[in-house]
Length: 262
Image 1 (cartoon, helix red, strand yellow):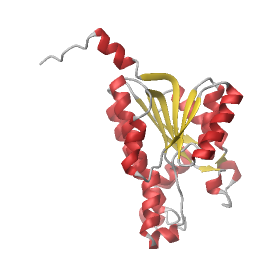
Image 2: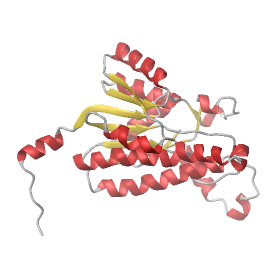
Image 3: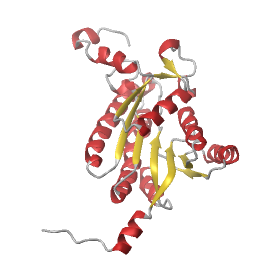
Image 4: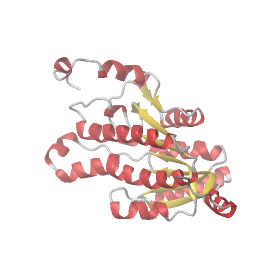
């Protein structure tokens, strides 16, 4: 069985949907996403900043355009509203060449154990909503046969710990999803990068006693993501030493690990 060849006009129309040098940033109000936006803008990328806080995204877009003379557009996207995710992403005027997703939410583990609404927010923001959004992006990039998707997961997904196992389980699911998506899209010309930050100084970790030598900044995370995109890496830990820290943690025997307070 042979597939029907596309006419030259069909090929032109198909190729024209990919918007080169444009990046979609999901969860764009976060500290890491903001750092990534400014890094990309400094390299001449045009941006679509997606998130829930439209006022903040408008302010950020204006600042980026003034500072870097690029095109930056705000876009409302609520990952907890699963009915609208696909519709909003499909409504974009073209398909951005690059998508970087920073969506994440860490809430009280004590509250998550008692309140199903807290669990819904954790899973929706860190996993199910992200999957819906990335599926919509991946579907379009698959049609184009090229492009890059980078998604921020977490070292918390490498092994469950008593201090954040609801958050960690969502990130574990996200990491597994990205592994499968990477396998699927590799044969279709699209690259998928899984980003696993360790400790990062952000508003989400404010007040936490973070150990300085293994704690990164949003700017460093953005730089590591960009390097991973350029080098087409599959998985990147940031800071780099977290790869080895988590290797040790993953290999602690369960009968020992369950006795630890982590």
